[in-house]
Image (cartoon, rainbow, N blue to C red; front, side, top):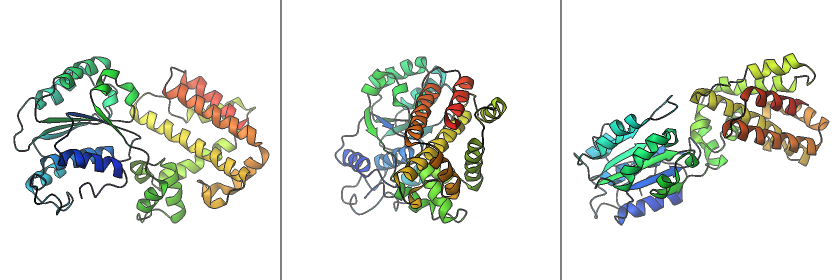
Length: 339
């Protein structure tokens, strides 16, 4: 069976493999879902399945997995050097512009395949295309080159114009089960069992994110919660000091870090709800902060905690989806949490 190296997403893998086997591969796919759940890995495996010399042989199709295949095509795709498969990434770039799309994608697609059966273009974080780039790219989707497959990868499908979404076959990728993430994380030697549990719960079903959580980030999480819990709501200087420590820029790095802080606060408040309901400590995310969390939970009513969670969600939407003034929104958030 193909795609055997990828954790989860059994339905998506089976549907794509069936399309390859039955020669019903779409000219364009939209892989959407949370970051770090395996969308890019599935896209690369699909490119391997489309161009693998062995999977092109009907007799061998059921006898070999893409992982075990050592054909020259699979080796090149795995190393990122196959001339007909190109992964387009724009790390650190806020907007993907028209010229970038034309030079790095459209011009390369219109060449005939050099070695494989298909040209495969994988565009990571496709939502970063600005409106002009999306409109230019739409022409390629309307008249796709023969023997080509385009795979757009995004965590924000709503940022793509409807006409692009309608011309792609959409495949949604859900967060991975927490148990699956934990099974992978506990193989690491740098985290304790409790730290592995915390990392798996902070991941939100994203294995990529879970693997990025090292001891330093987990310690930072602990310090953020402790500092937040010590703020006096009547002290403007303490509130401002905490907000000043939060990133307010618009770079991808600042946005990721701010989302991380929101997730930390959200899980911390969730722990308080579980304590109120009477759940065992085994269900809490922040196992190393149980005494602190229990003390605060005992002092707040359930309605108060639930209102804080609702306020956190509204602020998240205003900051990441709306046009809120980040400084004011974050100040109000901190006051709303500690009050």
